[in-house]
Figure 1: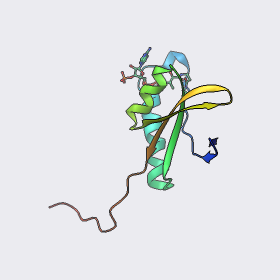
Figure 2: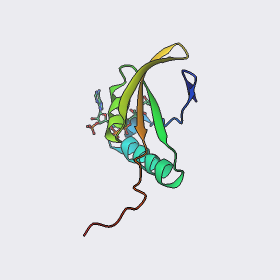
Figure 3: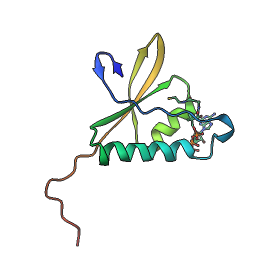
Length: 96
Ligand SMILES: CC(C)(COP(=O)(O)OP(=O)(O)OC[C@H]1O[C@@H](n2cnc3c(N)ncnc32)[C@H](O)[C@@H]1OP(=O)(O)O)[C@@H](O)C(=O)NCCC(=O)NCCS
């Protein structure tokens, strides 16, 4: 998707309400995050959280995202959450 003229890769989540608050969204989102960074080598993931959606905000925070901007998208207000892939040291050695 495009936000403010910048192409971003969005991570979104939606579960049936009778399965909320069991950690499922966090577990699934963390698995997608790991796959996106470790297998696909994507540089960054972004989530658009509707302003005031504290459940979605918590999921974003729990998978390591930070709020990077407040944006208007399709005439709706969102908190933009993002996480960058950590740079891997080129000559990493195992600790002794
Ligand atoms: C957002 C959504 C995916 C979360 O799914 P979930 O499986 O319940 O998420 P988790 O159980 O992994 O985590 C929920 C967190 O929100 C917290 N939470 C629940 N109700 C809350 C509330 N009213 N206020 C603040 N935090 C709340 C929980 O305590 C938990 O955080 P914690 O582990 O720190 O205690 C789910 O609510 C949903 O499908 N909502 C409708 C669609 C939606 O809003 N999608 C997000 C679009 S960005």
